[in-house]
Image 1 (tube, helix red, strand yellow):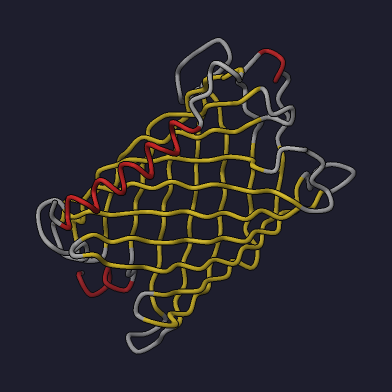
Image 2 (cartoon, one colour):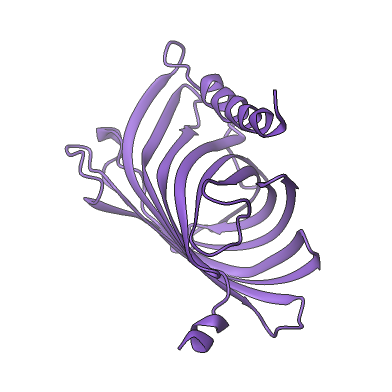
Length: 264
């Protein structure tokens, strides 16, 4: 078995194993809910010689209604997070988002979720990205440590922490390198979220897990689009009822904003 086939099989086993481990309809009550996921990411270095960089990511999501399966019926999430990062090595970057703003609506999965009340949140995040290459296959380990101040519009603000780990692989399909213009690539990732802290009262610390598969296209050296499918498991506080959020995911990445001016 050649090296490339081993890598593909490893990715398949990792992601499918995560999904299968959560396929527990026989012992859990699964509430299925359709979502439209989108993420828009803009970044650049402060100069050509600098190891310091900035990012801005915007997340926007819509959700179906209790009585409808149309994924654009109701708002679910809008978040804006600025980042400052430092490229410690060619394949390792550490970033901080001092304050990110999140406006969330409750998930309208069942009738018991109504009426819906929104939640305002401020979030500080430390992020570590480490990349590895095996032939043309790119793997990324991402760790995020978040401090969350929730229910800002309520009398009592709640604060807790969340730890996130994501393993991602990107596989170029029409050439040997991910960072080449006109590259078509496959993107697979799996991520888990663990919540804890003083104001986290739930007994369920494994707050969610995500699995994603998508196809991307790099239309300039520094910009790319992705369209895929996301599976997101979110156990409720009793750990018996589990919300399964699923639907299309759209990404837009502009990795070097300064190239826009040079292209003009």
